[in-house]
Amino acid sequence: MQAPAPSQGAPKHPSRRRDWRWLAALGAAVGLAVGLAGLLTLDGRAWLPLWGLALGGLTWLGWGAEPRLASPLVPRAAPKAAGPRLVRDGPFEMVELPGGDFLMGSPDGDDMAGDDEKPQHRVRVSGLRIARTQVTAGLWREVMGGNAEPGDPELPAANLTWYQALDFCNRLSRRHGYRPCYRERGFGKRRGWVCDWRADGYRLPTEAEWEYGCRAGTSTRFGFGDDPAALGDHAWYAANSGRKTRPVATRRPNRWGLFDMHGNIWEWCWDWYGPYGAEAQTDPRGPAQGTGRVLRGGSFVYSPVRLRSAFRDIIRPEFRLQFSGFRCVRVAPPQR
Image (cartoon, rainbow, N blue to C red; front, top):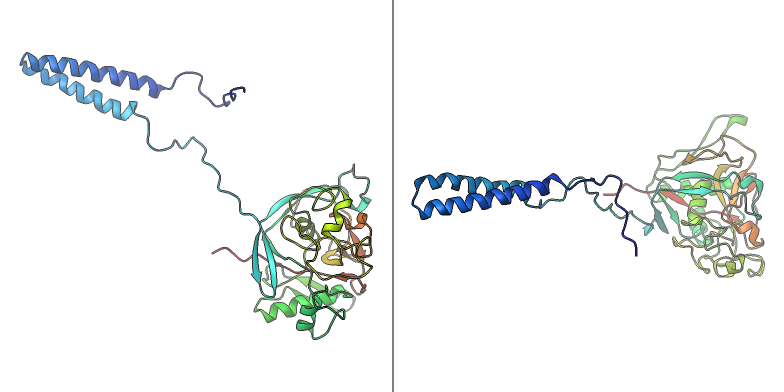
């Protein structure tokens, strides 16, 4: 095993501290010898060497001894970075994610990737909380007074427009004492919905936030790896769903504890659909306008290619599909 190479900043000569230590020891030894000789001969002048002995001892302590405090030049171990943690937030189990960087989109060499997934680019996402599951039909019925899809309350709420998802988020925010994120602004054809990104209420994830959560620190096609053969353990899709939605959280979660990021139902994102740029970005929120909003994650009727972490789809916000729903996110509260 090779010895580690010296760092570039290492000194080329013995330290001066070591030289002073030997000089101090020599001075102390000489002072002691002369002082003892003076005492044996009862020569009063022997007290002068004793002063030398004291000075040598002080020199030894001040210059020769090893310091008890760590040198400020020695780097301290960095504190361990906070990781995802499970929290209870209103009606949801949410995962609080620290902010981080990831590569959004697909690399040029991925033969499954679509052109709208390129160029792959670096994105920084701020910390947030993201629900572990899609909003369920039971919770939708409780908040909105209706049922998005009849049957099991643990099925994901589906057949919803983008506007209905925003309405739900605002109502749920008010119910729990949070400031709603969404409001309408403008008149006529210019009327549209805007998001208050400083509000603490529930909202839809941005496309970048969604992919950050789906990837869970991976750079592979899926949150569990590249091989579609493993999808059956993690997703409800065309090969195993029986062509119907399934109760949430009945497949394996990803590494951060999020369920159904692949399959079951499509999930609405905030962003207007648009092309990617190559430059690095921080908290991108999509184009200022467009014709359709982004859907992510695939659904129970699709094949693996549409369930990949980077796959994007588009639909007009007023349209509804049997397999379109959403999950909520919320800004992470400040740590106390």
